[in-house]
Structure formats: structure tokens, C-alpha cells
Amino acid sequence: MFNTIKKIANEVGTPFYIAHPSRFKDNIKNFRQAFLSQYDRFILSYSFKTNYTPFLLEIVKELGAYAEVVSEIEYDLALLMGFQGEHIVLNGPIKDEPLLRKAIINGSIIHLDCMYEVDSVLKIKEESPNQPIRVGLRINMEINTENGASAVQGGLKESRFGFTAKALKDAISKLKSADIEIISLHGHTSSTNRVVDNYKIIASRLMEVISIHQLNHIKYIDLGGGFFGAAPKEVDISKKPTYQDYAQGICNVLLSNSDFQKLRPYIVIEPGASVVTNVFDIATQIYQRKQINNKDFIIVDASIYQVRPPAGKVNYPFEECSPNEAQNEITVDIVGSTCMEVDRISEQVKLSHYQKGDFLIYKGSGAYQNNLTPFFINPRCAIVELTPDGYKIIRKRQDAKHLLDLLQ
Image (cartoon, rainbow, N blue to C red):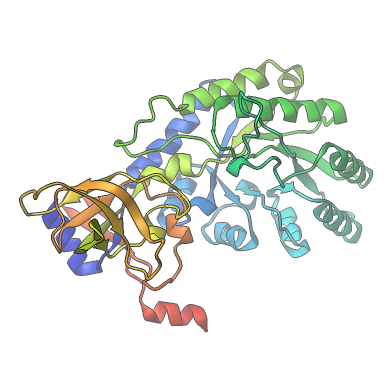
């Protein structure tokens, strides 16, 4: 393994991402099958924001999955990648009038989030009365833990997204009065615990909205994302929900509902991290061991921004890759190549290989890191795929010219 990693490093530089496309395909297929085993009308819509490396999006399109986007640039990216307009789910809190108009014309699934978006749609309808307009609505959700505390992401007491009950009544009234069809309800709510019960609450609430407001044209029930799923093999997820657990929990609620049985809408989910986390690893090279106040630091050429979320407290699993014999095991902080004090990739972990030129391969860097890593001090690194006869380069290391092109 070391020889291969060293050969790649000599060609593309370090650090570099190692992609595993077959894992991505398997994750999507397995998640889809979990739902199809429960219900035959199902759409998996991949969350672009999690990782929009083009080869991943090609796989999404190849497998017939939809694109879930949350901004105009992501919407346009989906079109450029060849997704048909009706295979794009448009979410997000900021959708200006030109974007809404574009999505309406393309027949995309649009989830309005705020009253200003309702007003924009009403204006579009007034200006183009013969244009059929079909929209969805994002519903504001409250989800709680077993102890009654909020389970909303970050421990927040309330989600800032979607329509509250009061605003929803007003929005639906205005849309119906303008002969605008409501075809979808969206309940995405990121949580701290990602348990199946959260999705049961969301499913129940969406069906309650259908009943209260007599929404008889619903074609899509969208549960959003935020699931557990893909993880490196080194991470114990035996006590976490599986794809099948989510599918059973959601479908048990929906299939027992008479309105759902009558309408038979598509169940939509929007997975991101749950299908891409284990698809990327990152290889980084050790430069130096440094001792300060009897504490050991190992300096590598990756940064925390490339490996894992800086706000996270969990050390990501890694593999030591070296041609050398193991040294005495030491406990170290592994620190990155930027000049930021917070650039500590791993804290108080044990190492047996820490000579200059040894490599560490961090596992599970597929979700968000590639999208969130800008040109900050270091270039955006290469992406490679290991093959039976070696490797192939998916993306070359981006250099100062790429940075200059972006800045002009």
C-alpha cells in the first residue's frame, strides 16, 4: 500500500483524496431498496451540497436518482450535469423570483420556505396566467428527545425553516385562491440524534397538514435527509439506525394513514452524508514530530478543514502507512499545515509510525469537506481512484493559477 500511496503523492502532491465510487453506488442502491421493499413509489434525491464532485453526480444521474439543490448555483449545476428539470428538487431559504420562474418552467419540484417566496410565485402567476404552477411547502417542525429536550440540530429550541401553522394557513389560502396547485410537502429537519422516531414525527405532521388543509393533490411526501448510514468500517455503527430501520419506521406511519393510501404519493428522501461519508478518504504526509511542554505534536500537510468538520470533537479513524518498522508508541496531537491554532486534526491519539515521509490515511471524509474546503493557505487537493492496476486521477491538484482565475 505504501508504494502506491507514495507513487500517487509523487505525481499529484499531498494531501490527496482517495475516492471509492463503488461504495457510493452501493449506498444509493441499498437505501433505495430499503424503501422499495416497503412501498413501490419512491424517489431518492441526492443532496448536492454534501459533495458535488462531478463523478458523483454522474453516478446519481446514471442510477436514476434526483438532484436535491438549495441555491441557484446548485440548480444550474444540476442542469449542466444533464439532470432534467423535473428530476430536480429545489429547496433552501433563498429563492429569488428569477430562480423560481426558471424552476417553474422546468417543472422542478419546488418547496417554498417563506411568505416572500409565496408572494413571488403569486406575481409570476399574475404575469403569466396561462403558465401552470405547481409548488410544494416546507413545514416547520418541532422534534424532541425522549427527555423532552429539542432534538433540532445544534440543540436549538426551534428550527428556522419552513412555515409555522399560522403562516401555513395564510400561504395555502393565497396559493389556492390563485389556482396554484400544491403538490408536495417537505419536512426536512436536521437533528442531533438522527433517530427513527424523528422521521415518524415528521411523517405524521405532514399527513396532519394534508388532512387539516384538505390538500388533495399531493404527489410527494418529502422527509428530507439527516440520516445515519455510510461510515468507515472502523466506526462502530451497530447501535445506529440502518437504511432499513428508517424505511420501516417512515413507511409504517405513512402506509397506515388513510389519506396516504388514497393519494399514493411518492415518498422522497434527500440523503447526503448517509450515502457519501465513506466514499472519500484523505492521505496526508507527516513532516515533523515536535515536543512542546512535554506534549507531542505530529505535523502533517493536510488541514482539519480537509479532513473533518472543525467544530466536531470526534477523532476520525485513520490508518498508518509507512515502509518503516514501528517505533515506540506515543500519544500525540496531529496538527495541520495552516497557521491556525485550531488546526488540530486529531487529539491525543496513539501513533507507531511518525517519521518524516510516513503517511496517515484518514477515513470517512466524503461529506462536506470537499465542498467546504476553499483555497485557504493551501491548494484544493487532487482526487484519485484506486484501480486494480494502480490508480487514476479524477481531479488534479489545483494551483495558484486556478486561484487567480477565481479571484478575477
